[in-house]
Length: 189
Image 1 (tube, rainbow, N blue to C red):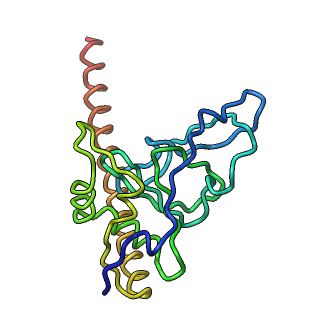
Image 2 (image 1 turned 90 degrees about the vertical axis):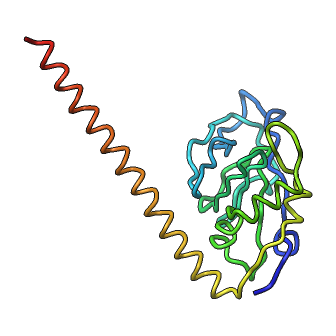
């Protein structure tokens, strides 16, 4: 295993400040905003915006881009869908060839990384980080094949966590529905 700075393993830049591209006569685009990036690597809930079409290609997602929210809690996701626009205050991390995006995504959610960001970051009430600080993050990285194996394992664990959360939500709703039905029957007498 070797210690590597994130800037040595990837091209890192900020998403698009899309407000200046808003145009009622433009094209419709799906835009990844802060709320789109969820804990445990989920991505959903995009904004659909009408923007000018002269947006640089670098702001559109590519398969396996790693995105990190720059305000706390620094949630991270690996994007599988191409052609979405990434908004500002989200770091776009495009990894070089010898790094597995799933593994690096999981690594960036680790407590050691959060600690580094805290030490490097601002002392504001709502902590946030900068591209400069993200580039300075030091990661402990095994060889590529080991990265792939760990990435797949950690993805499987995340899938199980999401399924467990869905089941828990279903059970809560079922409980509430049963109680509501009982409540309704009581009102009829």
